[in-house]
Amino acid sequence: MNLAYVLINTDMGSEEKVTNELNKVEEVKEVYGVYGVYDLVVRVEAETMEKLKTAISDSIRTLENVRSTLTMIVVD
Image (tube, rainbow, N blue to C red; front, side, top):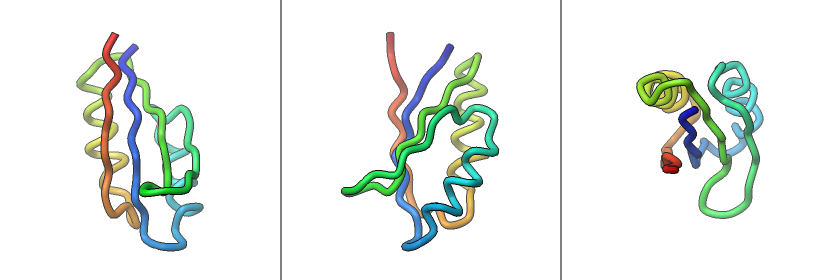
């Protein structure tokens, strides 16, 4: 299983809306609201690295109200 954590900055006040949309993405396993530089931390899992990249690029980064992301791919 391929695993990544994605740190997300959202437009102000849109954290709940983005969280709801993230929870619709099959590869998204957990979403946490956090205080600090980022607004959300997301755990993403996929069977292959290609599916992981596609989920992040096409399903997460393109969501409305997502301003920026930082992706950390977990290595074994």
